[in-house]
Image 1 (cartoon, rainbow, N blue to C red):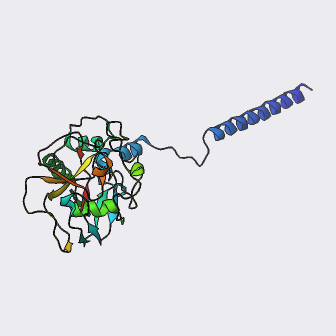
Image 2 (cartoon, one colour; image 1 turned 45 degrees about the vertical axis):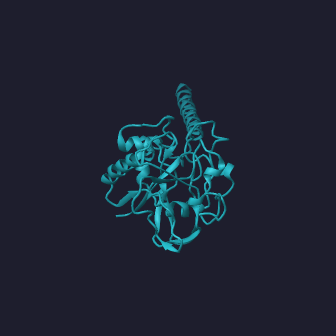
Image 3 (cartoon, rainbow, N blue to C red; image 1 turned 60 degrees about the vertical axis):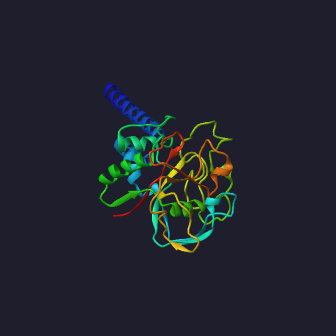
Length: 271
């Protein structure tokens, strides 16, 4: 009788252990399903590395060759004459304005007035941007990074549109009436039809060209004036009214000018 009792007791304990094990397994399955993967810190850090962002294919939009009418019949003399421009070579342009984190990753400093890693870099001159490009190109073997030409910029900004803006300006842009007198993190407004953010507003964007008069005839891949004293700026800023944000609106400053509304975006082509 004693032996039978001992065997029954052992079987009871074994059954209880099995039941408890199954209970723990079910709890673990609810906490972490077997199909769920756990991201490694290294992978996350690489995705968030500002320099790697600038080199990532996902950071750019491929713009195909095409043609458009550049300029506007407005009250601004420098936007005339409206003329046909052919873009004969495709290029990649940044979806966003270059951020302060990205600038600091390349230059080791942040001159911006409004501070924030995801805010656009500002308070940088055209000359400062050329130094940034020089250092970025030293870190790249597959691509050449540069500013867009003025024609490339307007072509990309319009994204096939012909009006004053590439869409509803309140949806697309930070400007004087809605900015709260500051810049905003890039990519918070809607993109244009080609997937580019903040082409209107937030910060003015430096272009490569010298500021000069337009040609009156059709041109292919124009590069602006041969010489000059000011470099082209496009897009308007957080501090300007909507009229300054027109797709065709032009401005220009001395290449050594810095202020808290001047920034830029990148273009890259294969080396």
